[in-house]
Image (cartoon, rainbow, N blue to C red; front, side, top):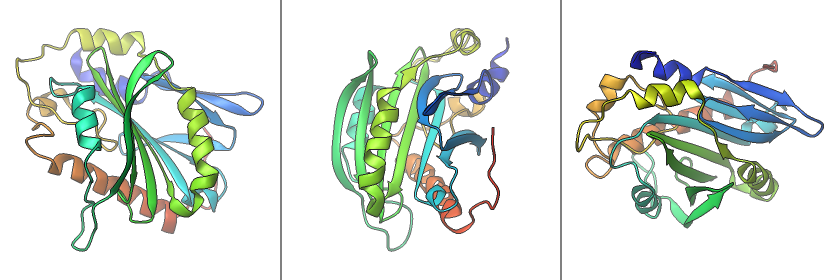
Length: 240
């Protein structure tokens, strides 16, 4: 399989949402997670977007899953360093986020950087970021909710995180194995809004340390997604 097909497999291949009694398994080409039965996921803007079915509840929280080709700067050390610093969302009057905690954790025998921020996307929203790498792929998952609803969503997100498993499909592994990575190739931290960019475009991106605006732009697009959920909710449910 040619490298040009990697993006397709990162986003669309082998997706399933298998229903069980009290929840369902979300299976993408790079990760698996167990979601409550009232959550649904779609592919939107080159990322997985998950939210609750209920019209009001859908505006309270969102989960975004993404992946991209990893470069030499895509390491747990880099992710931990970035998430340990306040993030300033785009906007003339925006305030930097408050770092609530950052740690390296093991989830189902795989290491992740787990970071909590208040106001990294919207001033009144909490966000939990999980970042990792696996066999040449950089993965980022964000869990965001309105801070007034944190008591409700913290245990929901905790259960989902505890079920999280990195599971690269064979087609993705095959494509990744064929990628020729140039020495000292620049890269970026995986972005929830650009998980599967064209391979040639990825080779020209700057590292997070060289250009922090890369991740700021990614966060700006997350804000757009959240605003859309808040002010333009769908009137009808979209079942997968």
